[in-house]
Amino acid sequence: MKRKILAGNWKMNLDHLSGAALAKEICAGVDAARSACEVVLIPPFTTLPAVAGAVRGSAVKTGAQDLYCEDEGAYTGEIAGGMLRALGCAYVLVGHSERRHTIGESNALVTRKLRAALRNGLIPILCVGELLAERESRKAVDIVASQVRESCEGLEGEEFSRVVVAYEPVWAIGTGRTATPEDASDMHGVIRIIAKELFGTAAAEHLPILYGGSAKPETAPALLAEPEIDGLLVGGASLKASSFLGMMPR
Ligand code: 13P
Image 1 (tube, rainbow, N blue to C red):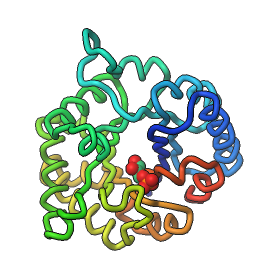
Image 2: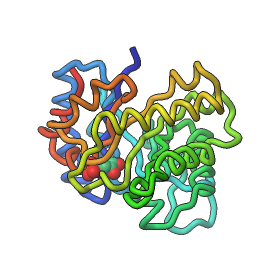
Image 3: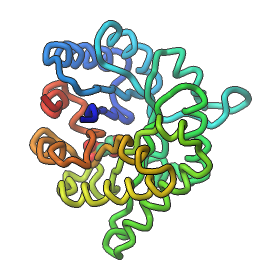
């Protein structure tokens, strides 16, 4: 049995004060539950140091929402992987759909960020997912497959063994419309097939694939019951300890 992952992407919410308070509440809940699942908090950059302090000594891990593809230099406004590691970050999101579609990140940039994460000892959570129009025109599988293929192109097997993928259909993010467990599971199967094609059977089986998109305490159990779904990447419902903890697999 793979260890499930419950990750909370706080997006552009919670400053260092309210973020540290929420992190402490979540740590207390996670540590009391003694769940086998890996819990990850992903706050905004400026909230990260306070959250890193709040989770110290607990089983909860931290992650960042993005990183730059270079390790240092004249890149105003960017944050390097090494800076995140120095804060004790274990994970980093790469290619979140809000960065792909609102900020215009290309697959090519996502690939470079994925490599930067791996080079700096961070576990990248590579986000992929189709738009509503792409699903309606039956292009979802092609889009997601090409996002995975292009992002992972040229990685060594050892590097890929450290990658986590999150399938987040864009039409489900922040809309209240969760994908059905069957739809999510089918797409996770597609992602695993591409992983097998690129890196072999063992790598594909080992790959953790999370689902994200309006996941909430009511929908989490059925999603997590799917063998193809290795965890959840949660937005809105991760901003309150009660709803986030309510999604933790027991
Ligand atoms: P919501 O859970 O708010 O739909 O956000 C999902 C998401 O984008 C997590 O990265």
